[in-house]
Image (tube, rainbow, N blue to C red; front, side, top):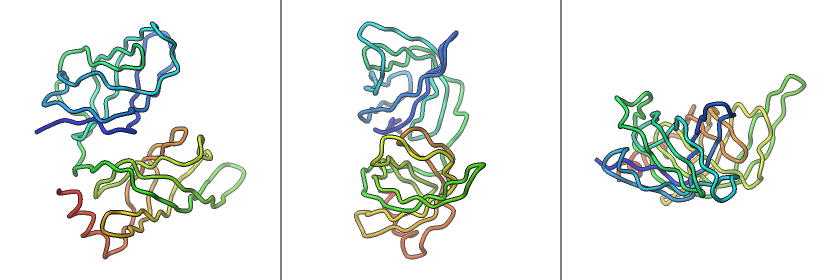
Length: 192
C-alpha cells in the first residue's frame, strides 16, 4: 500500500510557544511509509531560512495522524518516528482532482442565516466527502452546509455536503446526500 498526501491538503504544524501554522500542500507526495515521505512542498508565509519544528497533523490517503515535523524554505519534512497508529481512519479511498464545482452555501451566524453562491474546484473526493477550494481567497465565515454540482469525468455529481472544516479558501465536508444515479458512478470512480 502507498501512502499519499494529496495536493491541496490542509496540514497543521503546532510549534511550542506559538500559534498553530496551517499549511496547504502544493503537490502530491507518495511513499510506502509515513517516515519515508519526501519533503512536501507547502504554501508558507515564512521567509527563507526560518525553521519551525513541532507536531504535524498529517492528512494522508489512509487517514490523519500526528508526527514530528520540520518546516523550512516552504518544505515540510517528517522528522519523527513512525506513529503508533492512525487516529482517524478514512473509510474510503480519495481521488485527486481538480474537478470544476459550483454551488450554494448555507451561511449561519449569530446575526443571520443566508445563502451564498460559490464556485471553485474539488481538490479530492471520496464516497464519504470532498475537499473544495473556492475561487475567492477567503470563504464567508460560518458555512454549515453546501449544495454542490461537480463536473466529474463521467458527468455531473450533485450532492449536499455538511461542512466539517473551513479554512481560508478551503472547505472539507462529508456527503449528507448524493443524487442516486451519481452515487454508484462515484463509488466506481473512487475504486480505480
